Length: 71
Image (tube, rainbow, N blue to C red):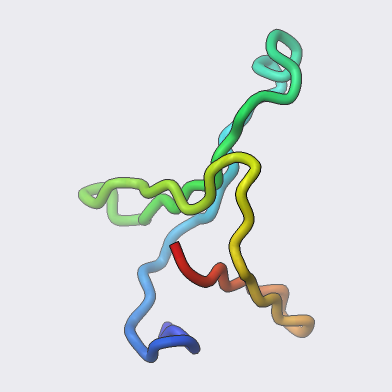
């Protein structure tokens, strides 16, 4: 897929907020981060958004795709 912002090839992966129901029971709402995890397991995951922080984003109303802009 080509990035609509810069035209470079995008890495396929998942954006994920780490947290568990068990963690919620013991610690309540704790600091969680949004992570990008490449499908290629030789690459390292990267913290995209720290807990409490926000990034500019775009959502496609047709397909639901979300693009998070910036670091």
